[in-house]
Image (cartoon, rainbow, N blue to C red; front, side, top):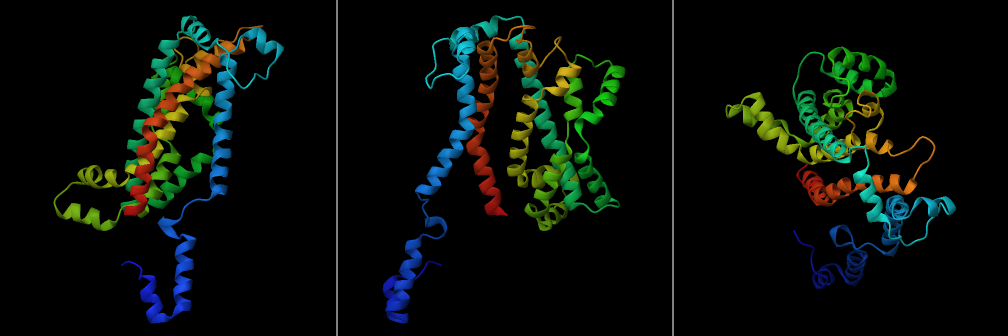
Length: 304
């Protein structure tokens, strides 16, 4: 129902009520509110803080080793050596294209599997009733308190016994699902998926798997997109475990970029050119999926 007009308010409640209504409308509540200059200033500062490291890496990548040695803090404008440094990275013996392909495979498979299995587990924990449900969920959440470094040695022993050292499945399989993903999807589906939709699907003769695929998964789309995006980024930038289990024989991109460092000399322009190259796919991903991510979050918020 729309708000009454000011003349109507003036006739029914008097001039004082009309002035109060005008002040309320003029203050801009709800969707009519426009951000002020302070909001734009804070957003500009936040954007500058996030963009500055990437731009600094680009400035170093456009310079050369001699200039960086003389002046580690570059000027505000890039120099003209970026394409030459990129060409040096692509022609180096680190196997850039192979490492890029490995990173795409690992990050894509890990993100897709994490979304699928976390949504399955979240649907089970949030909407199904079975014995030990709360205790099992508590155990899954408690595993997030265990540092990753504590499991490196036994995990490496398992991978060695399986004969997976130096192979991509040694990185993919341990990351097929995460405890945070299970907790994230459980909390989201707890409030976003009404029991009435599940009961209606069951009454219509849908199996539990069909109910999950046709009812729960569409309802979980906003949270699933966000989980998949952040899982992809975390897998893309992961260095510690791939460096241990893959080494230089079959590296992902962060491990390959580490090979650009020589034993006694570090060409920062070459290293930063490789860093910028590895960052470009993530920037493209956020540019493509950013609008869909925000739209999915807003759709979930409205429907919830």
